[in-house]
Length: 123
Image (tube, rainbow, N blue to C red):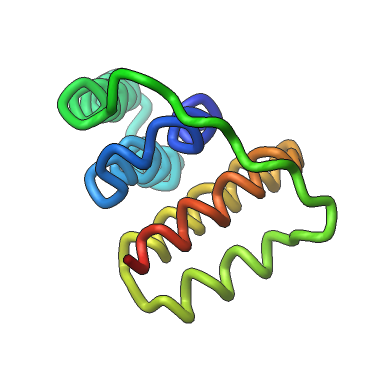
């Protein structure tokens, strides 16, 4: 999920709504894994990878854009608040997925890119 979230910061501008699914699909799978029988884990992870790869291949632009400057003042709560204020379900799901990634390993650069991505989903 981290790789997909980081990639969205540079390539998500190509189609913000569709490319959000490259982050949210694996996040959804990771959340349900604990309640699935272990025998289903490999297929579930493969499906998440396939969804991310397919959406990325279909909608990502050829060139990345520059990432915004990291802002140490940003918080995960601000990311969530912005997504909720926008009201777009894609923005909310994306912010939630990125919050999971950042909870595991904080990264001001990823948080700054995620805030920009959420703001773009308002357009």
